[in-house]
Image (cartoon, rainbow, N blue to C red; front, side):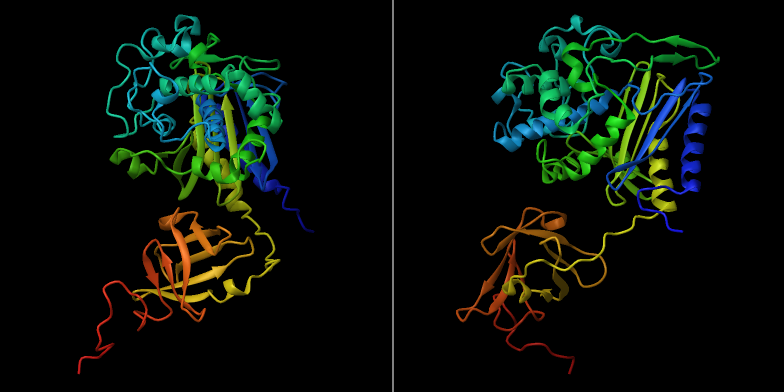
Length: 461
């Protein structure tokens, strides 16, 4: 008997259920829902609840808190891709009068803009947004606490500014732009600014007694782009697929890779723990695995979406309690259970459809000084360059259509690669961002920087 890659084995499903059951019981959450996505398909959903005879399913809404920031970041990257802004632009260029100085769009996305973590006045998550009708009410008299670009300092008001930027450039409310440009194209019909039935109620669970208190539900107003949204495990599963593979109607895969790339300097403790912030997404390490996504919380709710891009497995976990289950650990363990119990089955190898003979000529062994590298053509049409053995600098390159390539990742990301030919048309060397790669170590006659000793290679005699 064989099992299709889209199905999970019974033992895997039981392990997933056991993990969320432990989390709900030990975390004393009124309810906890979860889902796992593999290879672009939801392969498991589960729920545990304190209500007898009923469990929420993948269509019940929970508030997702700061996962909203990832949606806001997608809208900002759309504006960048359209040419409406540059991530290096100071916010003041597009939204003058905020008082945040030269903080750039990228710095606000990465929480390095130097802004305060919270708004002045009453706790914004538990008070109506009508108390803060203008951006000045969100920022206060002293919006900047540290110099922009110097360090990571998580800022909820920073994402309120990004929401205002979107409204300014789109000339429409943030929630309307979000619905039109992201939610509707991706089919996220159960993700909304205000709760839509069926939805969970938010609760505070007493730390020293098994009793609960209902939490208020507030419209966050100006702070909505930082944490307003409600969603379901079903919708967040579809969103997770998009965050890995992209959708040309919303945002291309290349821009999403950029969103998943660390962009913020961190304290030593963050570096040691494996935490980094990107552009509207977080990277965390657990059990030797790199996970990207976002966590979220608002009074009465906890949420987490985490993706292992290497395993193509994502997990979503949500609970309706102010504190309790550590949902990042839950989501990370759900990913681990599937990835380890049922390792990813790679797609079948397939040869290139079309071959440019001039590219085949470039494949094989090259030397940067005395370091041996191999250049390969891959079936996806890319060129890869990396050490022949062991660790070292490696990157993939995309053709520019003119005989040159641009690095996509690793040390050579963004760097130009070109083959330099002799007058007779034969290849002399590769030029990679000024580095010269030759067919032999320090090849005689090649334009090696610093030249080559005329005595050539020698022994000790």
